[in-house]
Image (cartoon, rainbow, N blue to C red; front, side, top):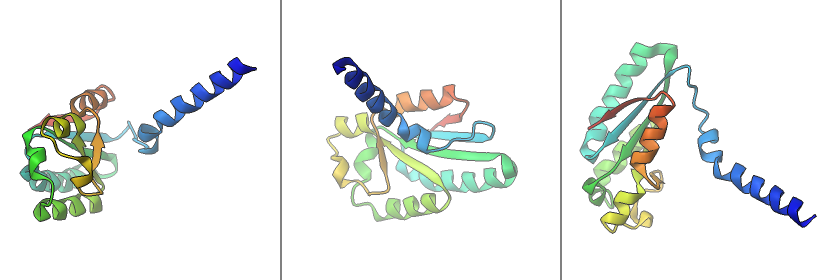
Length: 140
């Protein structure tokens, strides 16, 4: 009986731990994109690119993710221009993430980031995982 409870609890925790990727409902039959950026100023041209790709892809356009990493994370807190770009990204269904390793390296507390910016523990690893799933990737 004790083992059954342990197994059920472990299974439950495993399911909860993978819900983030499941909840995003990525359609792998579509063109899904990932940009790994080391410069937050690149978000503006990335959003312009998203608009053009949506036109080109039509119904084949899928998910579009941006992962921000490196020293540029120090430019995110209290940056109104970046916050406006995040709002535009959200309106275009572009998911913007920030690398947790970069935040740690440059001593940026996640609480100082905009609330609509999600922290990924390891941005490079997440990028590789998405690439293995067929995302078209670009590093800038």
